[in-house]
Length: 166
Image 1 (cartoon, rainbow, N blue to C red):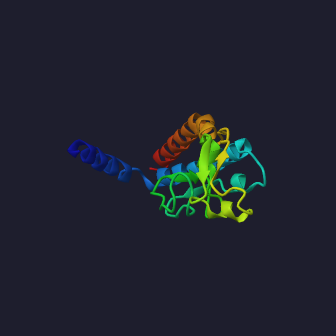
Image 2: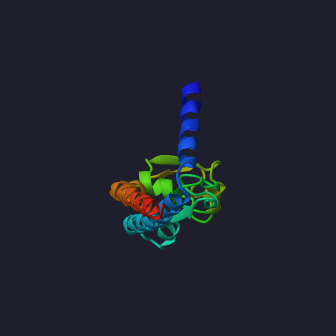
Image 3: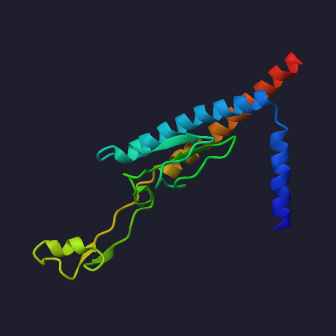
């Protein structure tokens, strides 16, 4: 565990040594690339009423992600990063769409609403399951390398410009 903490402290020192101009360039490019990644994920998301697609958002550093979002829940985004999430307080099922569900039995005591239909479903019902419709992680994998290249390019450009000024 000590090695992990030492590595974290070393990373923090290295991040603090980055010039402000380079930080700003990296953050701007991260936000630009995150917007592109969100568009890719939204284009891959299945659309019934559009709620799932519209719940995919990028949250910049210092802000809190939407409550009930996947992955993350209401989390404050750390410095020099952008968090992309799917879901919110109205859309709480993105993980079920992404990974699918298997067939399962819903017992009446688990879902009291089953008893409302004239006792027709008094004991239980069999849910057939749902096929997976991956949209989040394929969108991430499609955009990951392009994003890394673009951020590195923006940082290198900012470093060259700061050397010219000095």
